[in-house]
Each structure stands twice: as structure tokens, then as C-alpha cells.
Image 1 (spheres, rainbow, N blue to C red):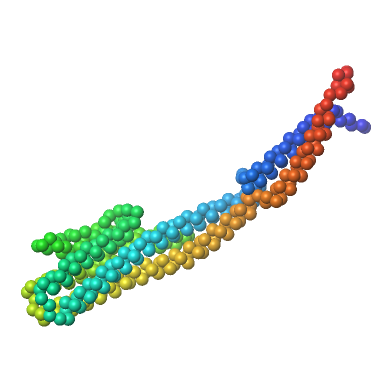
Image 2 (tube, rainbow, N blue to C red):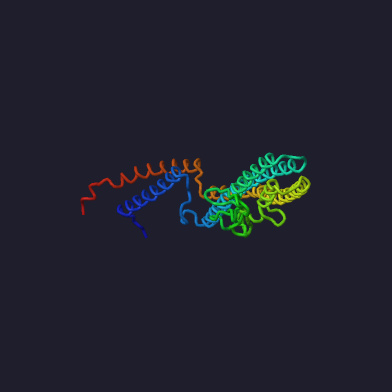
Length: 310
């Protein structure tokens, strides 16, 4: 039995072949231009789920990296504020020692007391430090100024400093199930029991100004203030050390998360990225085949005398 292929069938086949090759040409051309060989699931059904997983991991690790970067900024600023407080207490210790270790006229004591007034203000500024409008030492209540003057003496100088922030630290997620404390409660940094920095400075100031003290009484009171200053510095050093340790931990984790993000990014790129050299070769092959098919198809489509007979 002889099967005859009509001219129309040949023409239809040729046109279909042209369309298929044209589609392939457009596909590889797009891959070369865009740099992507997988855009939708139908481009590579077998590997598309792996591509989605890799992209999700890139996004997740990028989020962790940004969170750690923000936490590092907060902690660095917090440590800077605490170092400023440390310098304040160092000067207070010097003043207490100077007042306790020798006879001094009331005018000289008043000069030291005036400097203590400025140190109280300096400490308040450090305690109420902000970044981007958020307070470092208000814990979870970062919109609330942590410290304020709650009471003044008869001369209008600060006598009591109140804490209005939260007693809970603010913390952020820096990895799966892992958090880091960023904004500390000011009460545990500046006003620990036995280490209240504000009251230490205020007591020292008042001891310097007290006109009722004898030299011996003043020396005893200022030596007690020296002990208070040391206790306050120790408490502050403990908080500073904890935040510094958090910064060291963040540095290690940032490097680890950066490596994981890079691994996921490479995996995603391997799946969806175009192999430019391979795609260019395929593009040339398809172009040559398409040109040949066009030549054949053009001959098939030329009308002959038989098309007008019968």
C-alpha cells in the first residue's frame, strides 16, 4: 500500500517546523539577553523546586544578615554611650580622691561640686542616648526617654533620677531560634543595686558642698563616695563587657551567615543562570537550521502549474 504525502501536508509540516525552530531561537536568544534559563516551572520542572528552596534560603539569610547589621549598629552605639559613662565615673573618682586627701577651702570644694553637676548632666546625656529616634537604654520601650530628673534640691539641682523605660531588654532574631539582646534596660546598666551611677555622683556632689562637715567628716564621706564610685564602675563594666561579648558573637555569626547565603546564591545561580557559551552555540545551530528550513519551505510554497489544474 502506497502512502502519498500531499503537497499541503508537506507545507503544513514545514510551517510547523519553522514555528518550532523560531520558538527555540527566541528561547535561547532570551536566555543570552536575560542571563536566565529558568524563569518559570515549565522551563525546568525537575530542578524548579530546588531553585525555589535556594532562593528562599538566600532571602532568609539576607534577612538575618541585615538584622545582625542593625543589631551591631545598636550595640556599638550602646557600648560607646557606656564608655562615655565610664569616663564620667573616672573623673568622679578623681574628684572624690582630690577632695578626700587634703584640706581644701570651701571655694575649692564648690568648684569640684560644680563640675559634679556637669558630670550628672553628662551621665544623663549618655543614659538618654538615641539612634534613629530610639533610646538605647529603655529596653523594649525604646520610644520612651529612660531617665529624667524626678526631684531637685532647694537650688534646683537634680536630687533624684527616675527610670521610665522598660525592665525588659529588647532583642532581635539573628538566626533560627537564636536571638541577641540589643537595647538594654537602663535600670540594670546605670542604676543597679549598690551601683547607682546617678546617686553616686549626686551624693559625692552633696558631700563636697556640705558646710556642716568637719575636715575629718568630709574626708570620711568622700572616702565612702570613692567606694560608691568603684562599685558603680564595676557594675557598668559588667554591662559593657556583656554587650562587647554580644558584638563578638555577632561578628562570628555574620561571617557564617554570609557563607551560607553565598552557598545558596551559587546554587540558585547554577540552576537558573544561563551558560552563555552553551546557549550561544545552540543559538548558532538553531539559526543555521532555521535558515535551511526557510529555504526548503520557500520552495514548497512556490505555486506550480499543477496547482491551477484539476
